[in-house]
Image (cartoon, rainbow, N blue to C red; front, top):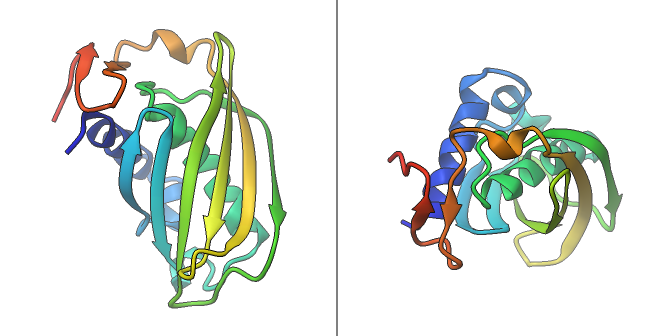
Length: 162
């Protein structure tokens, strides 16, 4: 398993352990792949996440998955949201369906990070996309942060906790 994937899953576990919104709405989220700046997920639509795909679920996932795209670059603390939005292209699914998502960190500076999340149905059709801007200024110096090799396979700076 790549260091970026291991780290991103560790950050996701910290979200779940906080027993907040993420743990209640999509505890069954699966992170399949993470390389620096890109994370791929799936979520089986169940009663715990509203039983259907609607705007609230897409925006909640945009928030969480955008944060995990920031984490895939080695940020343990992923900052706070400053802007978030979504566009809905077509119906996304119902209970029992699997929603797929790809979160991409499109840019990150000293203060702000910009992410985009594309949501697809099992056939690969785009059903929605979200954007998420995060203030990361103070989180950049978190002692749990790491730096990955370009491919995300290895931690080259910081502690790689397994």
